[in-house]
Length: 568
Ligand SMILES: *[C@@H]1O[C@H](CO)[C@@H](O)[C@H](O)[C@H]1NC(C)=O
Ligand SMILES: *[C@@H]1O[C@H](CO)[C@@H](O)[C@H](O)[C@H]1NC(C)=O
Ligand SMILES: *[C@@H]1O[C@H](CO)[C@@H](O)[C@H](O)[C@H]1NC(C)=O
Ligand SMILES: *[C@@H]1O[C@H](CO)[C@@H](O)[C@H](O)[C@H]1NC(C)=O
Ligand SMILES: *[C@@H]1O[C@H](CO)[C@@H](O)[C@H](O)[C@H]1NC(C)=O
Ligand SMILES: *[C@@H]1O[C@H](CO)[C@@H](O)[C@H](O)[C@H]1NC(C)=O
Image (cartoon, rainbow, N blue to C red; front, side, top):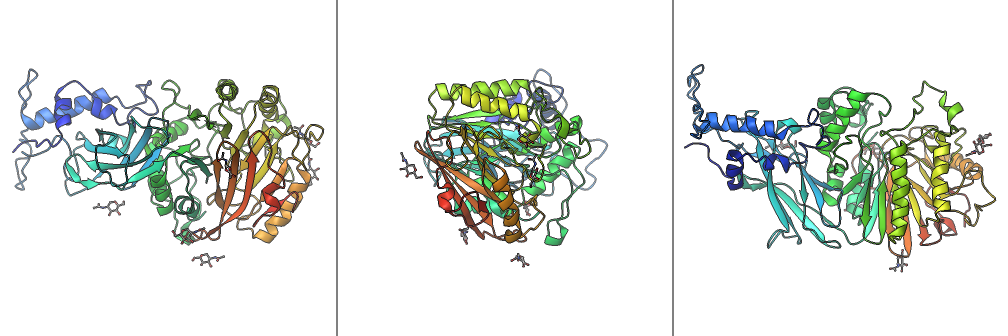
């Protein structure tokens, strides 16, 4: 019995010239589809596979090749080489559950990882075949809305990323992967509903914030703005969180780190629960070019993220039009093309932070950003939600953090000018990176003529900056709430635009939008030294459509943690 083919589609594809089973897995082309010297060439993967299949099967076509004979190793140990399959059929393990991401009105990316198990690990030439189905009901019954098969292999760390199409807006979906050669082997079921939009913002401890977001909120989309992984090793051993490997440099390093992070149960749950939209993956930003390429490639293998521009391998900035309700514009203010930042040794940045020409995004991205904001207004979208990594508002924290927009003041002014001059309303900037919570009205720094910090009059929008999932507070690692509030008390007084400051708790926030209101609720984790879902809502902020400022009294006049500029 030779080469049992369980996959009908695959038989045709193996013999034809088509590479579609490879191509359908976007992990092969992403992020370098148009840069063959960097991406995987699926035609050569296919050729490798065909050559292998011919050797195995004595296929007698025009380019007939000899059947598989192994004179060097006669079946010394009684092994039977006759049934080597063309497609791996020794069983697969969906080791890292499932995930989804970058939802559009009519499509979404689905992700899983299908690792061969069993005693007979596949020859490197044999692909693993995975099928997927997406349904509009939780029981996965009836006809799937979309389905298909795709290959994965060791070339992409056995990751699989497919685009499910034919979807409708405002509909709930559930999806599942299976082993093509044994449909009884299935992945966990992932799902989401796309009728209300909620965004959550995340980021040394357990990822409890991801778990609370997955289990205790009704988030439809997770927006991740901070560092998804860290390149350094850190010191997690004392709480059972020792980092594997070494400081990250090669693709193997990045894969190992992503693999380990994705064993955290809370993080897995969050990926299963709803699609993610992300922009940032790791903190190294400046000049480590090979490392950056390795990081981008591994990131695209492991994350359900779309490749925006096939010619621009580093571009991850992109826009999501979500009906008339909002545009979600994701910027890359970390990696793409920014002028040099504070790398802790080049303290010169303080003296050049005011330079007109300094750009945080690079001119191409900056122009695209302004055009996107204007186009969003023109098409009549109600909200403009801007997701990016670093704090926008001027913050004197006994000095400015020049690794934030405070190090790129002219660039910030250009953004504010665009919003004011073009009368673009209802802009909400979401920020990460600072590892503390900051909520502000958007206005020109130091301008209390146009802007009134007490009433919010004259502001042009709002910034919600969120703390980290686990990374330590800039107020001091492990700082207790009482001590953190003393510091916040000063910050809300000396920074005009800042309305709430909180620096003790790790956590995330949700943003719930409808046509008249945007509501942000911040969540604080009580203890991240162990895996748990113990958390509380620390503050809730309302922004009314058209108001372009936080509704007064800010946070209803009281918060459960941190300090408001104006209490009561
Ligand atoms: C599947 O992968 C999980 C996670 O790595 C592991 O715990 C489990 O033992 C694996 N199962 C098999 C059958 O290999
Ligand atoms: C920052 O705030 C401190 C008070 O904490 C103040 O002494 C200092 O002058 C401020 N710096 C600037 C540049 O405003
Ligand atoms: C606001 O004022 C402070 C203190 O004078 C100054 O350091 C800072 O550069 C000013 N910010 C801008 C954007 O001009
Ligand atoms: C929007 O949500 C708010 C609650 O946050 C609610 O009061 C308001 O009625 C909603 N508006 C619409 C149009 O549903
Ligand atoms: C946090 O949880 C750990 C592990 O359960 C426990 O040892 C520690 O005392 C807790 N910390 C606080 C502040 O409750
Ligand atoms: C989250 O839900 C779990 C049960 O699923 C519960 O044990 C926990 O207390 C909840 N946490 C919060 C913050 O509501």
